[in-house]
Image 1 (tube, rainbow over the protein chains, first blue to last red):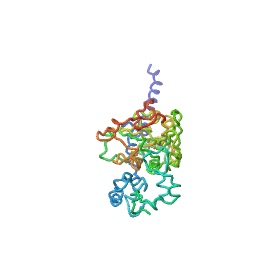
Image 2: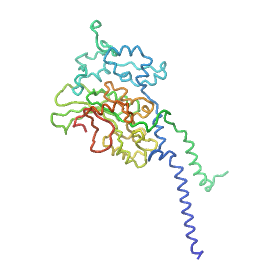
Image 3: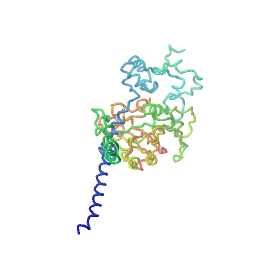
Length: 155
Length: 243
């Protein structure tokens, strides 16, 4: 009788070894945080959140450049965030001396917002730049932080 | 000591377990940010959008989006008279450089910024075979690019066309709602630079967020509501022709 079950014991031993191997492999391969919040790697949330920022944010700019804030307050561009025109400047905020913002070409920059387009809101100031200035940079006449041309300063 | 076949077999699982600890030291969320205190979405005010493309440029800068791919983009709709089922939609370079001069005032014309809708019941996360994309406890749909295989199921599943395969990483890529910014108390790059306030980040779990008052007093719609995706990008003043 006992002789007849030896092959079954061997089979059971092989299966037990397979199960142990599976458990060990699974523990090694599946990341520890998998399933922390759901069917994904929980640590990924903090990893994605740890990415460095490129845009410093308006409050950061205004902490130093108070003179520009005062200028902007007098005109319609007060609602426009600094980095909307000047580009991503978290590097400059972190190290103002060595990272300098690039000089802007107002002939291109201003047109992105103010080039006439029938899809734009009717009350938004728009011009056909080719007729309006014929390629002359907008900053020649307009002061970008306070764009409305005052009568006494008009050329 | 010679490495025999027997010794190697013993050492391999041990080495695999050790490797995991070599890779440990994962970053942690900022201490004053609690995942369950937020439920993120966005408000897009179509009548305010001027199609300047600042959002598209800012997104590319903030998130290293490759040239020719867009995590957000702006579409120009032209609806000729009553043909609201056949709008003409343009989005040159995703609207990145703004839109060219167009003074043709026939029909109805307007801009629609698009991005991931951060659906609460997102079709894209449901199809991922490996759990590489997911909705976070604060309601943002993210991609774990270290886990993604690049199988493209999610790209096909998104009804809004918001996903692509990043040619550099060969993994799925999409708007992360600037998760690295909003968890630090900043707004998204696109909302930061929007000159007219047409885009606003919204925390639906924050009772003080102005989104609640806005939703109560305006006619607001989500994209493809019939798909029941639980989209959390709310569009104010959206025309019926928008797809």
